[in-house]
Amino acid sequence: MKLKDVKLTNPYLTLPKLCYDRVDPEPLKKPFLIHANSELAKSLNLDISDKEALTSFVNGELALEGTDNFAMCYAGHQFGHFVPRLGDGRAINIGTVTNEYHEQYHLQLKGAGQTLYSRSGDGRAVLRSSIREYLMSEAMHGLGIETTRALAIIGSEHSVYRQTWEKGSIVLRTSPSWVRFGTFEYFAHSKNVKELEALADYAINECYPHLNDEANKYFHFFAEVMGKTARLMAQWQAVGFNHGVMNTDNMSIAGVTIDYGPYAFLDDYDVNFICNHTDQHGRYSFGNQPRIGEWNLRALMLALEPLVAQERLEKVMEHYGQMYTKYFLYLMGKKLGLDEVNNDDFDFMSQMFGMLQSLQVDYTLFFRTLSRYEGKREALLKLGLLHTSMNEWLDEYEKRLEANQSTLAERHEAMLKVNPKYVLKNYMLQEAIEKAEQGEFALVDALFNIAQNPYDEHEAFERWAGVTPSEFKNQKLSCSS
Ligand code: AMP
Ligand code: MG
Image (cartoon, rainbow, N blue to C red; front, side, top):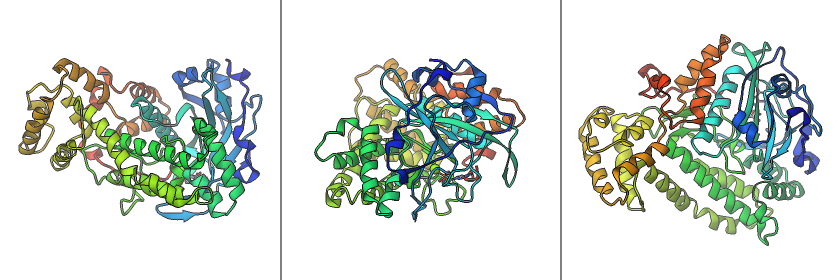
């Protein structure tokens, strides 16, 4: 369907008034289209070939039938401290589209101006942060990790101040739900139980409709969110992704990765890596993520107190660790090319992580190289500082492989499909951003293609498949965006 003919719906606006505030986007000056996600457009059943219409849509100028723009209200624990009112400070919801499979995509403009919840912020997003969100959300999708996805990104001549003057940009992003853990916390804290219940019913219908008629639906709802979160944490850990700002307002009720800020993929494996410059104590370090997922679920559990007895939810939480471990072992087993894994493999994997940490081995390159391992150790030994512990681990690995039923060729093929050749490391994004700031977007296009096809060879970009240049390794980024 042509973009101009699309009819938007606004299911969120059926909720009580406290949940949102109506606000229209403020367009950027001289907008231009940087990139559009044709694959996503296809799954939304959208014809976006009219680039002028698309640009004006992303810039909040083209209102479609059913347009009724609003910002959502939420609270959140930021670095462990409760902030009673946050809300969409620079995201404006512009409606929902439903495709032929009845899947709903809620559209949101990030960087389209101030809302009731902007506090001291300007409601804008700068080009570099928009490019980061645009590319990384697609990269996560390409890696099979649940995430919001962006449909298009525009640049502009609009000046935005962030320590220096930069250019404003807007990302049109989509999600199966924009409800956050912090959305529940807002109504629990303000003791608006009627709204809390309406929100829970809404979230169930949006994300877990099979629970609509369940007798204990709020209990089951929490169990579903717990399971999804445990799985998401396992996926982040297995691929080496550090989110960086796991505040409860950045945790999705649908269990998808949301709000891309100072994230990073690991360079050399480091369980203590902290990608967020402002995270002085490492609350959101790479290795802490599963535990923080649990902490955040407990915050959600408390917020549901008026709806479900805490003891019952406590029982659900007892399974979090087990569920996380099960998912994580499963994913690591696949990365290692093992036909079967069980809890006994934990020691073997711990030995591997210890070895990767002490030898300072590039996480992505290690698994990609291991994906072609046939007994010759040279390529792997070259990745680490010392050979002894790598050799010891490979001895164990070979013993472990003996239990496999699959052939060597089958193992290699399977491993090359789960161990990406490329992840979008920050130095690669930085290179694309610097060019983009000069008006050249070829590297954004290239990284987008790599993001969608991370297991392919992309010979022209071989330089991005190796070890991160030492001056760019394990750098921290600031939240300022
Ligand atoms: P974040 O850490 O990016 O998830 O943002 C935390 C809160 O600050 C959210 O409520 C955001 O909407 C808000 N926020 C971040 N940047 C801005 C901005 N430039 N203008 C207004 N609100 C912002
Ligand atoms: Mg956020």
